Image (cartoon, rainbow, N blue to C red; front, top):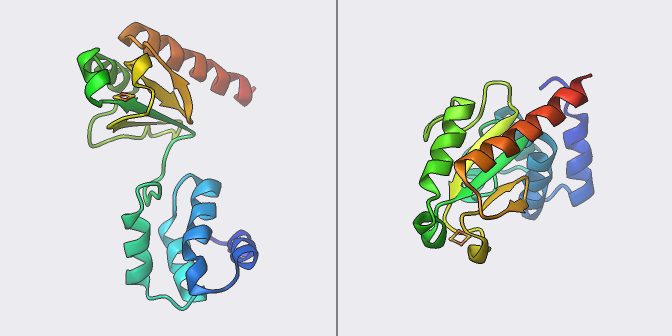
Length: 160
Ligand code: FES
């Protein structure tokens, strides 16, 4: 990253102190959808934390990601309630549609990330997915592809 001004602003907001690292990384994650490596290094230097320690913190918290993520983060529940109501074909349909796999979870255009989670807390609506934290229940492979196409249309309209 060429310009760390935005990062300086985030640091200034939370205070240039070791104890602020989580709040700072949280804002960095929110801004970029992930924590770029050079930003992590920069923050660790500014807060006088060793890069190894900063890396440890960034990898410990599930909400932080060191890999770029898509604009739309799709979480598919594969917890017990969703699994028995056939979440697997939904996961397969999404991955097939987006050319993704268990290892490759983000599309090359950085539009979609597909993750599986163990419970989204809406078991009554199983099988459940969320897209950027909006809950969609009683999903089917067909419904999930329709939903995906709606979001693709949105992206297309934004580009115009
Ligand atoms: S098991 Fe899927 S929402 Fe709880």
